[in-house]
Image (cartoon, rainbow, N blue to C red):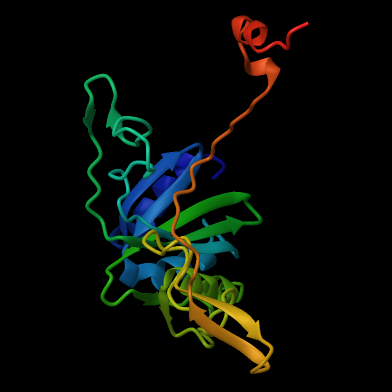
Length: 232
């Protein structure tokens, strides 16, 4: 099964009841899986002889808040600039995203066949939960903790679901699109109390727009250079 089309056909015939959609792009196969079927699909992909996806490369989560709708938010940009999913010829938007806000993504590898496959499961926000696959691939342990920490995804059945990158007292999930750039709290060491304390963040909100301002003769016109030249 060296051809990606053959792999897609095998997946559709064996897992069709658990698959919502399949897409081949850049010679890679992506399957949208029903969230309640994630363990069934993972077990079949690992154990069935035509697939043999014995290695879990990564688990991550995606926040689709304002996906295909929002543009770059700056203080001095116009409403026309960079935007996704637009029909530029007719000046209209053609993107319609009606799926849940969050998705969990699984990247799998078949070492023996050198195949890669991507699973995507969209989750309802109440509850924002999907079954753990730690007992299928032990590598999922820290990956699921990371997705919980940064995105707030709950993995049912995980043996030790707690934060892994942020501090124990951290508030919120920093990879969500509506998380403030400055965060919610800041910490510092208080010499008088002899401990680290948490306080409301004191950094003023700002929009991060890259700017390059140069005062350099290389970027001046010839007339400007003559006009600014010192008197001889």
